[in-house]
Every structure is written in structure tokens, then in C-alpha cells.
Image 1 (cartoon, one colour):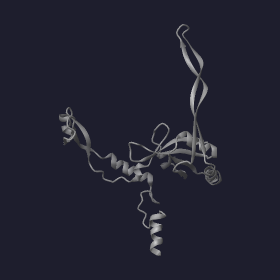
Image 2 (cartoon, helix red, strand yellow; image 1 turned 90 degrees about the vertical axis):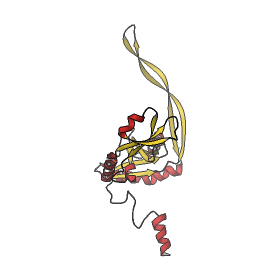
Image 3 (cartoon, rainbow, N blue to C red; image 1 turned 180 degrees about the vertical axis):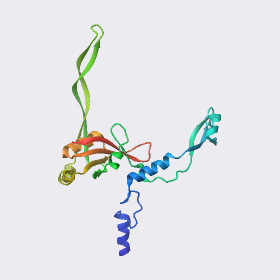
Image 4 (cartoon, rainbow, N blue to C red; image 1 turned 120 degrees about the vertical axis):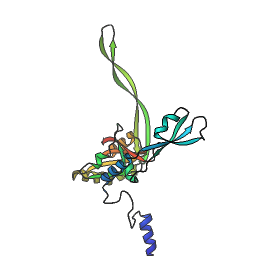
Length: 236
């Protein structure tokens, strides 16, 4: 019986007896991330695995100094690098991006204020997309009068209306939002991390439930084996 309870605690309930996870309690994520980034930054390219352009199955290893000798009829298939002095953990993959694709993870890591992070794997609801025509202005230069004129034009814009499931939205309005408001009142910074959802959908949902938090999106890059969070600002 005790063995069964231990197995459930250690493997099913995600409470390991010996916490070996990178993000375990007590770890200084900021300091560890800097150490791992420095170790990876010191990795050097010492050679190349070259592939013949006419016969891709024909490969050879060369040093960096010999690269120019083979560059005409060969192409780089893989870089040969030195081993890092420290094996990177999942902490190295902790990345946040703002709307301009700038690194933003240190906005949290270097924040001396305490933070509350609300994480949602994905929102539960549906999105209705439509097109709306609005009036916009454009500046036109008149070569005869050599003056600039402002003209009004019609412009079609995409409108996103995210409609969360009523019971799902109710969980936020009844539990999450009051908790967030209480945290803000006590001086905490609050972040809302969501996966598998577009910026418009998350912002629409946050506005609907009146969630006062910095909204971030959790999405997987197709060309990288890790996740990033992209920031879209505050909501509502």
C-alpha cells in the first residue's frame, strides 16, 4: 500500500521524492540561464562536415582553415563544434518575445517585484472571423500644386471575435480574476501565458473576463525544439 502511494506521489501527482527538475524550488533561474548561455557562447566551430554538391552521399570532415579549398564543389552539411563546458538544461529554453520579436524573458527574471503567472495550455471556445470596412486616411502628393493632400479611403480589416465557452469563462470570472485583482492590490505583477491561440483571441478573451494582466502567448517554433512566449502587452 505504501509503495503504491509513493509511486502515485512520485510519478502521477508530479511530486518527486528527489526533485531533479531544472525549475525546481530554490533554483535561481536568472543566474542559471546566464551561466548556461555563457557556456554555449564559448562553444567554437572547429571544422565542418562537408557534402559533395554532385554526390550528396560523398562526405568528408575538414578544419575551418581548409574550408576555402573545398567551398566550390562542396557545401557545409554540419558544423563541428567543441563541447560546452556545461550541458544546457530546459532553463536555456526559457524564452519570452515581445510583439517586436525582442527578447523579453529578463523582463520577468530581472524584475525585483514578485510576480504571479497564470498559465493556460489553450483557451476553450471558438473564434468568429469577419471583415469590416473602415474609413482610413492617406496622404497624396499633388505634382501640380506641389502640395500634400489628405484623402479618405475605405479599408477592409480583419475582425476577430473570440467566444469562450460559458462555463470556461465563468471559472475565470469567479476564481482567476478575483485572485489576480487581489494579487495586484498586494503589489504583485501578473502575467497571463496562453498556448495555441492567436494574439487577437487571447486579448479578446482577457477583455471579456476583465483579466488585468500582461498577456503572453505560448507557441512552439516550427524550426526550433522549444517553446517561446510572445508578449502582446497588457489586458484589458
